[in-house]
Length: 308
Image (cartoon, rainbow, N blue to C red):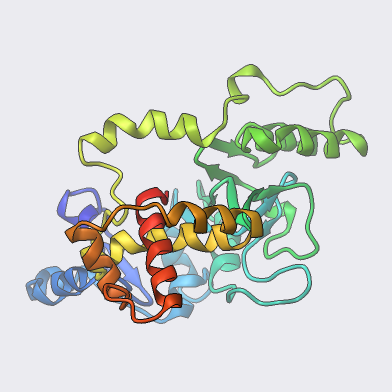
């Protein structure tokens, strides 16, 4: 919607459409936009079967002409330093998500003229109360094999892996990894001879930290950019305040000592202001009726004030 309104989404396919889609997911504002389009504009957005959107085969000549220089952007849970992608399941067989069209799109990126596959992910995640790297040395399950490695993007940069040797692929991935995990990953590569023993990560890539990203984005945040939901949301104001607070509580609860410290700190919190009271009300904790509810309310108030 925003790309179309700004005149960026404009290249037409051979049938006159500017977008072929298998499904739309968005906010009510987005659905209202689609419903309000005049017929001639609505015709620019063509609903097609998933087999048409996800596959190159079937009307292949036409699709090849329409998809020259295509960019296929997908998200992943983890990526190995050799470029294999993990998106749908864990090493022990637990399924997290369907593969969807990810493999199909990536395969197209190698079959089409000028096309590229882009895999995006955050460099770290928080689990069991601590940060973990989402760029890993190896993993017991992969959604996309290493021979389909292409472009990987984290908040720290871009690794262009297509056509690179394993050694150069590892060096490129280390450059976009969080610095807290770079040496551990580098040691794993060195231990089996995938990169030279004297290799050192260049200084330009040794400051890959959340603090540096926060500092770089601070001026933009002050100007109103980098909103939590830049393309609108159905969450109320109270719910948007609660999301980071509840996430913070979940992370805190993963560690016994952290939870104990949070409980003690929460007991000293001052009374809630009007906005905090509204958020507590959304969780039915504005007027706690029991000792347990009073403790929950105190913890939530603490998280509202100290969550990320």
